[in-house]
Image 1: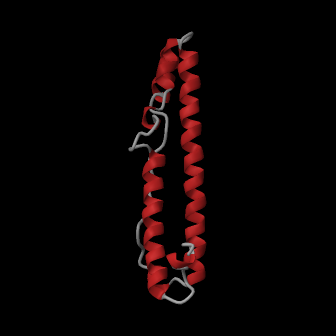
Image 2: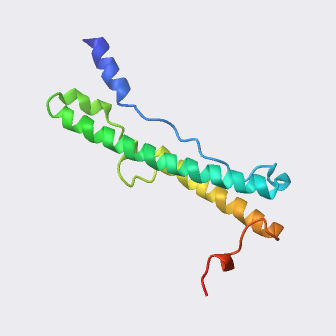
Image 3: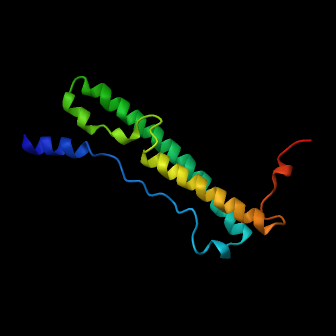
Length: 126
């Protein structure tokens, strides 16, 4: 019985720690336009994956809450750091860090000039 209780308490700490990206690195100044564009694309894909992960965690919590009506110790399995629109969830922290990193990279590309990053005039219709 004590082993089962310990397992339930351990699952109450479910979730993961955030691992946010750095806004800038010492190697940024050596990046070419192609490398900047590739990293921005990877960061956008990572942001999409974080959104999918956030939705899955919220759905998992909903399933656990439903099952906990019949088995109340299941409440210990909830991941309380992933509630809807919770700003301190690992996914939200990492998503914000990637957005900040992308803004930094795009600003670097725009400073390089030329065709490195298209300006907003290419996106705006006349």
